Image 1: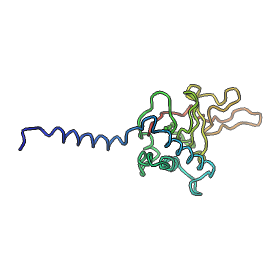
Image 2: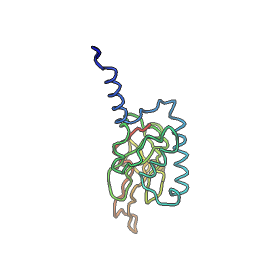
Image 3: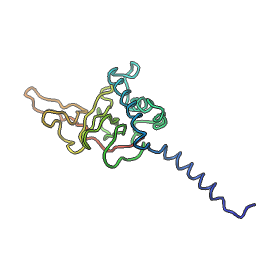
Image 4: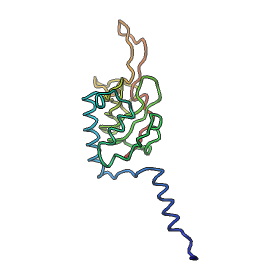
Length: 189
């Protein structure tokens, strides 16, 4: 029996446990480009086809399809994830969001629960893909102007549940804008 404490073995075991609990580390900036392009290409295919192999799609199925589009992303989302489980994935992103980050929205009926960023303009304008009415769709949202639909005629926040207008154009029932419902941005790679 050795007089030496088993620190190296203990530290290796704790590190292994911590890594398995926390998931894979985030990719370095130079490693992100290729997976982000694969994710975007898959998103465009899904948006064009409006389905996943001809069937309506849920947010969870969309996210699994996107993150499995590149070898480096395949283990970022567990197969058994639920809509509620999406909220705990990855690391909370502080600062400017990046392509491939997961957007988490308030839990509201007939809206979307999550989306994946396809493009970030400046540090505030985001183009993402999410599931609305059973199909993958492009979603726009703006981080600093969350309650505005348009600025200078350009859509900056998509309706995730449409407003109902009366015959004279008056608002009968309010809709929700994507920016208003955004709760969190999570980094997965």
